[in-house]
Image (cartoon, rainbow, N blue to C red):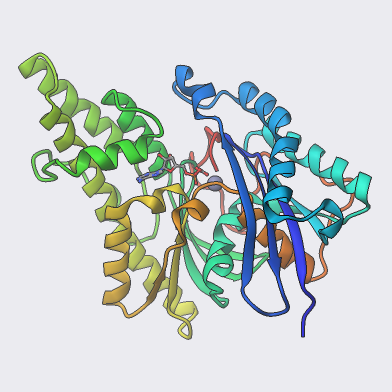
Length: 365
Ligand code: KG4
Ligand code: ZN
C-alpha cells in the first residue's frame, strides 16, 4: 500500500493566480481538496492582451491570499502538507518567479520539500487526476498559448507528435473576438455567437490538411476572417448581428474540422507506437468548446478509442493540476532544492525540434 500524500500547488505562469490542495491516498484516485483561482482578466482588459508587468505584480500580491484560501477550503494547515509544488515554467517569467519565490518562502519556513512542475505537464497529467487514466495515452493540449499532440508515458516522459506552427487555437479565438468587437476571453464569446450562425456562409480555409503530418496552423484563419469582415463592411457599411454570428460559426467550424482531422492522424501515429491502450485525452482552455469536444468525441468513437475530457475548471489554468503533477514527481522520489529556477521556455519533449513560431508570443501556456 503506497503512502497517502497531500500537496499544496501554486500556479502563476500567465494571468491566473491559483493555489490548490490535492491528496492521493495510496493507489486510490486523487482528490482535489480545494482549488482557488484568482483571474486577472479585468486588469488586462484595457490593453487587449496580458501585460507581463501587471500580471507579475498581481501574482505577487495575490499568491499568499490564494494559499490561505486554499488551505482554509481544504480545512488543513501548511504543516499537514507533504510537499509544496509550484509551476517553474514555461510562461511569463515575472509571474513564474513570483510563484517560485512564494513556494521557496513557504518551504524554507516549514521545512517542507519543494517540487518544481512544468505547467504543460500539469495540463497533460490532468486526465490522471480526474479520471485515473493509466499510462500511456494520447494527449491533445489545446490552450491559449499551446497546441500539441503528446504521447504521455510517465510524469516526465512525453513524446510530441506534432503541434501548431504559428498561433495556438485559443489565441486565434481571442484574436477573432477582438476583430469582431466581442469581449475577452474570445473563446466563450465566439462560441456563443456561433450558436446562432451559419457555418457555411463564409468559406474559411482548412490549413495544412494537405500535409500528412500532425502539425497545425491557425494564423491564416484569423487573416481570412479579417478579409471577410472587411468585405462585408465595405459592402454594407457595417456588420449585422447575423454577419458576426456567421463569421464566428465559419471560423469555429474550420478550427473544429482541422482539429478533428489532425487528431485522427495523431491517433493513427500513436497507435503505431502504442497499440495497447486506445485512450485520447484533451486539456487546455479550448477543450471547453462544445463544438470542438463533440468532433473529437466523434473521431474517437470512429476509431474505437476512449475519449477523456476533464471538467472545465480543470481544463483551464488551475493549481490542482500543478499539485497533482508535483505529487506524481514527489511519489517517484523527485524533488527540487532552493536552487529551483524559473524557466520561461521549457518544452515537454526536449528531443523534439522547436516548432516554428509556436509560443513565441509566450503569454499563455
Ligand atoms: O488553458 P487556458 O485557461 O490558459 C492557457 O492558455 O494556458 O486557456 C485559455 C484559452 C483562451 O484563449 C480562451 O479564449 C480559450 O482558452 N477558451 C476557449 C473556450 N473557453 C476558453 N476557446 C474556445 N471555446 C471555448 N469555449
Ligand atoms: Zn495553461
